Length: 240
Ligand SMILES: Nc1ncnc2c1ncn2[C@@H]1O[C@H](COP(=O)(O)OP(=O)(O)OP(=O)(O)O)[C@@H](O)[C@H]1O
Ligand SMILES: [Mg+2]
Image (tube, rainbow, N blue to C red; front, top):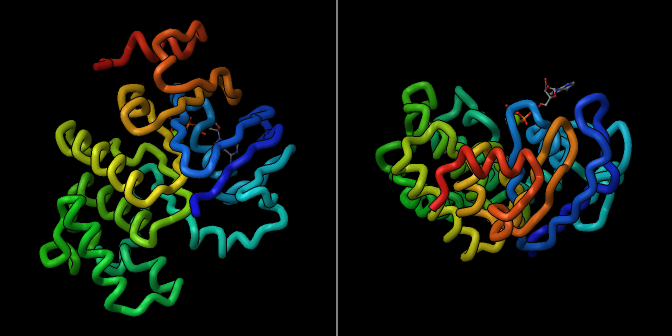
């Protein structure tokens, strides 16, 4: 069952001020905004890596202050800016991290990893035994995506997951992501600078400016927005 996410007047002084937002089960929301606007910080608050200085973050209607964060992370996938792979583990060991914590039988882990890595263009036979230092930046990023997705998370938090990819692979992964989402039905919060990407992957867009939410609208309405930062992003984007 996909998770819900709710921010109730969440602040993280001095970076974020009074964010309020509800993301429904199975919804995909993009966080957009300029560099330094507070997108990564907001994602880290949702993941419980940072604690708010005011307000409350709720996952599945339970405050993170009252939640078992370790159990929560096993149900979530987190794709961080850069790949965040464990350097001393092979690709396969990285991808198997959460299945192992969940106690999956080895065969189930291997099958799930093989299917996903193939879909991401990194067949297990060829890449499974390599260490991250041997991979290109884009390959590392794809292995990080596989690690986040393999256990079918109820909540997927993605921080510029495709930034190190060439435009062709990037486009393929955006489509693969949409497909995976339709098949598996996770709730997604997706941070990106790229408005075209936000519109392709998500049905809703939340714009950040200087630590505040300044717009929250359906993707299809983005080009009609009068909010200055959204207009700037629309004007600088190459939209279909
Ligand atoms: N733990 C922290 N304590 C205080 N300030 C922080 C902390 N983490 C980040 N900041 C500051 O908060 C601001 C927002 O940072 P954040 O990483 O959330 O931006 P962002 O929107 O993700 O930017 P980018 O698009 O460049 O990744 C920055 O000015 C950063 O220096
Ligand atoms: Mg960031």
